[in-house]
Image (tube, rainbow, N blue to C red; front, side, top):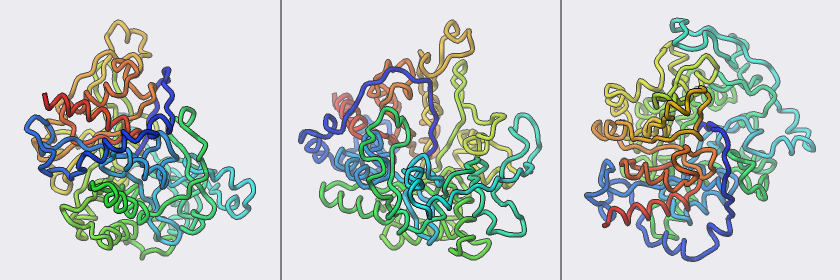
Amino acid sequence: MYTRLAPPLATKSLTRFIILGGGLLVSACNSMNGNLPGAGSTASASFKTLDGARPLVIGHRGLPGLYPEETRSSYENAADAGADSLELDLHMTKDCVLVARHNPWLSDNTNISEVAKTNASVASRKRTVPGVMINVRYPATTENGPTQYLSDLTDPNDPKSVLKSLIVDGEDHTNDWSISDFTMAELRQWIGGTTYDARDQRPTDLNGKLPILSFQEVIDIAKAKSAATGRVITTYPESKNPIWNNAQAIANGCGAPGSHPFENAFLKALKDNDLNRKDAPVFVQSFDPASLKYLRSIGLKSKAVQLVDGNGMNFKTGETIFITDKPNTFVSGRPYSWTVAGDPRSFGAMLTPAGLAEVKTYADGIGPWKPQAMSLTVAPAQDSSSKAGLAEVDAIKPTSLISDAHKAGLFVHIFTFRNEAKYLAGAYKGDPTAEYLAFYRAGVDGVFTDFTPTAFAARNTYLKEVAR
């Protein structure tokens, strides 16, 4: 999932020892049944979730608040801390293996820059060819955003030219390394995962020391931890940047021109692990509806989740900003497949009653950005300078999104919860538990969190409220 930064505030430090050092937490985790949505043993008429079950704690990239993201330690400790689900982003390697990594460019979520200083083979694979500008196919008006976007197809007559530039969904990452230029064995041998969000405030002692994982390895971790804890721990893989991944995979010989080797491998992995069932312990997610629809068309039966992004917040109205005059419109303002197809709509179109009804035709739930479900506003007196930000937010109020989605038969899993104060609205006064409780009380079905222990503890507080 994408990450946005807010103005920094003072933050409390956390250590792995304090959070995970005691047996009490593990004991408490094991006392809860990790049931799938709809399981009756934790259902309560008092919960406002779609199915009446307690909301899920989803370990976003594992437990990246305390460990390098999407590594074995991150996932295993998330499971031990009570996560109901292990979330991961998927890309495809040079040798056609699905790999768990947040971004396909590697300098900001691995130690590749350091490795390249002494490894000539790694250094030589940096992509340096600039992308080319493409005119949008929809009306080139101000309300639709920039009139051109970057493409990595630098030679229209050569599909393999996409292996020279590093442009991902219109976003420029020239002078970086691409995950699709390395085999799975090379990634394991040379590259280690690191912290990403709030990297200046999170532990860094394990950066670069933990190998990158394949999709299969994360599935295996979930299976092993389910057996060890007696809970059902699901996986939550994302079909990430599918247009880019398919083009890279085809250029690397993983599929024929015009095919979908990325999604085909995705579905094969689910089938190979008996996860292609409606009741399977897995959620398939994507920001791009075209990818989810294609997966459905080739036989996906598992639960699917349409992620919904945004580019900013209007603190006067509490509304989400989708389209801007910057290239981030192509990343977070609308699904990239819509840009390519000439569809000028924004992600906001998915959040209307008609949009939710459309989502229901191919997905079981939505994964919206927090401000879309919880309006954040600043009092006019504070906003007079027009520089008010997240820290100045003094009013929070649920929007109609959760109830609208539930009416459409869709569950709602919100992203992304983090402990650092710079990610918290001022109204929460630096307390991440206050944010979780606001969403739990509003009826959210699940939360994507970088700090499973905090989300788990906050949910226990909420469960006690409901039991009164």
